[in-house]
Image (cartoon, rainbow, N blue to C red; front, side):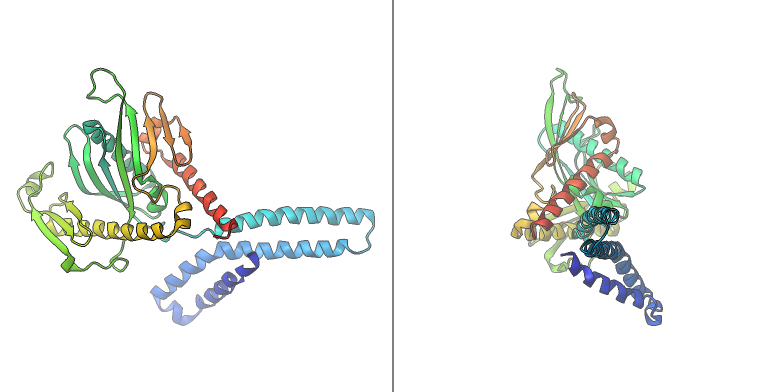
Length: 358
């Protein structure tokens, strides 16, 4: 398997020559594209060259051992063989990780949609908790949050909130958050002190460019209406809110948080593209059982993925049986512990598939 990596090295050498070609240098877009591909291949090629050198040293030592040597020299050669074998094993593991197929969406911004599920007002309050959790995480990462639409219940909760997180690599970190989140706690509205169980669903979608999803304008029904709720005098007294209905799929998107109808339409179209792209990916995954098996909770939107148990101060991710008692810090946006555990589990699954030849 590793000997076949010469194709990567050949391509890397080809790109290296291109970066010194005056025609490429003078074409800024081509130069940038070439430089990006060159940089992406560099870790694989560097590790492959290390693999070849170690393999060569190992073969040389084995050949030397077959010759007539005194005992001291034999011991030195045997030590060298042992060291090279261990190094080779480590390099092969590193190469496996480098060869894990990259998610083409990992560098993208994300659309996040949170909806209150079972539990009435408490579910809406929990949706608000999750919203603030992701906003705090985005702030910690230095990312920007742009609200697309909200449907508040007036006591700090949301029936639905849709927002965009703008930051390089946002999707790679947040893609595992899609699914049903469950909360167990005593609601603020509960006078008897009883613990309630409520849910909220989270959908994390990569931002999609126009060229990635073609939308026929004739298949969209476009409505305007007067915005409601908090938004200021201008928003609430003009027909600035928009509603898009994608007729073939029945997807409906409303956006009213901007003062301008044009800006609301632009945001709604971004979300529609993301949803149509996600629909296409879900359909592809359904046809590909190996792809579904290699995923850690980025496929089924109805999957219950996590429980937040407030009385015990516990957060449990059911996909990887991972529990932490840092519920306060997690609600404050310190999600790296959970995300790192999920990323590691996902890599292990994909490595298992590589070993099985899938």
